Image (cartoon, rainbow, N blue to C red; front, side, top):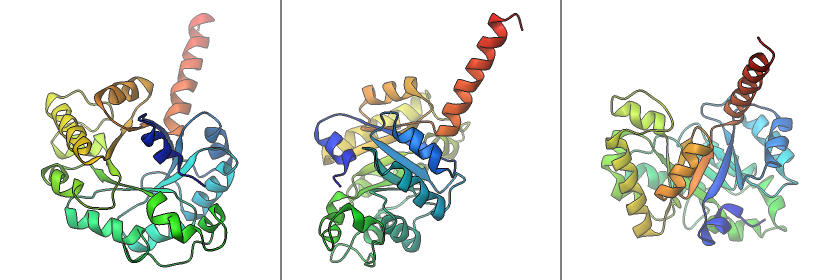
Length: 256
């Protein structure tokens, strides 16, 4: 299975990513048919666990989306396990130093580039027997999250770490670490200046910056800034927004 995320980047376009917080294979199946390039199962702040992640991947398998995961932490056990379960991309939270970025790369790659243990129980189905291991180090997308003041201060050293494909911005935590209200689509000049530097430094290194957005408006703005992967809220947020819109429209046009 080719990694569609890398194919989109190679074409010069931006990846449109979905986000799954609900532990439901049916929800995953529906989202996978909506035109996204990739679908990320959120094991950090979502209500997902390993079993539900596998169910989501199984439900998405018939559709041309790249299965990815946000792991709960930068830890070798869970990173190796989500990759063995079929993840073709790992987004890792709270990577604040170059050493932590090096650890992420080491946990996610097979020797000699890393220390990942061999046992791709589901991932092996993406190739014939023995071929997955030959391509996994190159095909898997690794995006450490840059979401703290400390990470920003270490930005260039983190981006210099060999083996990462870019970084993923968590706007809520990033703003929070600067004493601002946590939210997704930020407009504060000091934060926008950070975004500009991240995009510039990624560009110098051929890396792909990603960011979490609240919806299409923020995603379009991010793409126009130079971000190469944008996430449209999550399925919970999309459901809430559309449901509220329909309820409000019904009440408004029926006289309440």
